[in-house]
Amino acid sequence: MALGSAPAKIILFGEHAVVHGIPALAAPVSALRARAEAVPAAHPGVRIYAPGFADALPADLDSNEVDNALAMIVRLVLREFDLTAPALDIHLQSDIPVASGMGSGAAVAAATARALCESVGQAIDPEILNRLVYEVEKLHHGTPSGIDNTVIVYEKPVFFIKGDGPKPLTVGKPFQLAIGDTGNPSSTRAAVAAVWALYDQDRVGVTARFEAIRQLVLSARSYIEAGTPDDLGGLMTKNHALLRELTVSSAELDRLVDAALQAGASGAKLSGGGRGGIMIALVNDATRDRVTKALQNAGAARVVTTEIR
Ligand code: PMV
Image (cartoon, rainbow, N blue to C red; front, side, top):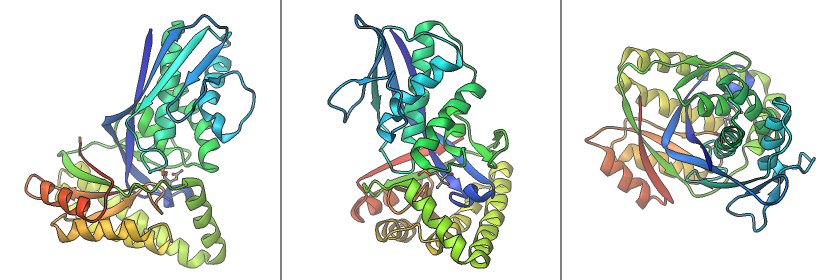
C-alpha cells in the first residue's frame, strides 16, 4: 500500500488580482488534507475510487472532461515518467470542502500523484509535481494563476507572482485565522471569468482596484515578515471591500465578514474565488472563541481555526 497526501490552502491577500499579474500571499492549512491510498489490484490499469462517484473511474480514459480531472493527474504522471499503467486501485478521501476556495482540486491531484509515484517507486520532485498539478488546475479553472498548486505542493506560505517560481514567505511571528465556510460551493472559473468581463468593460476602474490590492499585498508581506501580524487586520478588511467592488463577494460572505468584525476580529475578508466558499478572520487567543461563535450564529456551515507559521 502507498499513501500520498496534500493540504488545503487559503489565500491571505491578492486573489483574483493575481490572475492579472498582481502578487498574492497564500498559506497551507495542514490540518485539512486530501489523502490517497494506492493498493495493488487484480484488474489491469489504474482505477480511482472517490467519494461522490458511485463507480470507479478508469484512469486511462483519454478525455479532458472536468469530471475526469481525477484521472488526468494519473495520465500526466504516467506520461511524465514514461511508465506503463500499474494494476492499482487508488482510494481518495478528503477533509477539504469542494469548490470553496481551499484548493480541494489541487490537493486531491497532488495526493493522487504522490500515492501513484510511491506505489511504483518513482521519486517525484516538487517542481515536477507542481507543473503537473497546474495542468489539472487549468481543467478546473480555465486561466489559473498557479497559486493553489504552488502553495499546496510546497506546503509553505508563499509570496506568489503568476509565471514566477515560488518565493517563500517568512512568517516573523505566527498568527491565527478563523476560517468560516459559507457552505455554498462556487465556481472559481465563473468568478475569474466575471472579473475578466468587468476588466474588459472598465479597464481603468478595475486596474485601479488591482493596483490598490498590490499595495495591500506588499504591506501585508512586510508585516508578516517583520512579525507584526496584528497590523494585517485593516489590510484584510480593505482587500475584502475591493473584492466586493470586483463583484466576487456574496451576501453570505459579507454577513460572515461583518459578524467576525463585530465579534472582535481585527480584520476579515473572503478568501479564494469568492461568491461562496470561505472567508477568513484575523483572531487571537482573546477573540478566537467569540469570533467562532459569531460566525456559526451568522450561518457558517463550518468554522476551523488555523495558525499561519
Ligand atoms: O481555488 P480558489 O477558489 O482558491 O481560487 C484561486 C484564486 C483565484 O485568484 C481566484 C484564481 C487563481 O487562479 O489564482
